[in-house]
Image (cartoon, rainbow, N blue to C red; front, side, top):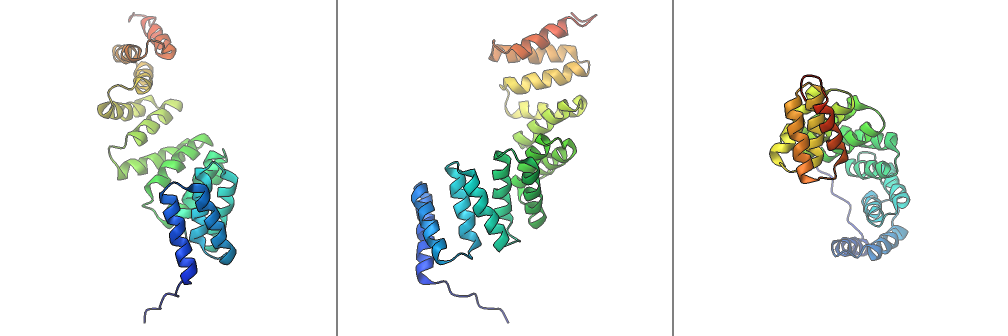
Length: 232
């Protein structure tokens, strides 16, 4: 027999609805005050702690966000959304290990939480775990084949570990979707240069300079290409 859900206190239900309405209309500080009013009456609702944490994050109070989101996970250990928000907060605090741990927990609870793979990729890369970063962005790419951001980050990570051959198809995919991006043109030019495709690298650097004549990186690499024996 299915268990009946406990009835909400009408006053608390009304206040909870009010909080969501304030948030929807951008009245963040008023919404936060309403959250704390709610929590004065009921300190066991993980959803309100999560909402308070999200609102704190919106106003840049990362410490307050972390405190509330941590409380949400303590009250509800199987709360992937709270772990996700907590991971993003830790990332913005430059606490990449804690961010990774929270995002891994989120994915453990909900493997289809796609944006958790994205932030885990970023956090892993910044804490020096390129293997995990690549795995995370590949999982995101598997779910969203045309993801520009996943292709871009995979390309930059492969370039950073000298996996230039593997970087090339990812940058090429980004350019298919966004043909005028000087940063991607530069990174693809570097990958071409490092794999001996000097004509293609020159083409990329020239395109980057057409878009931004002040791009010193592309100009320097263009000069390097012309200085390659037998090419320039």
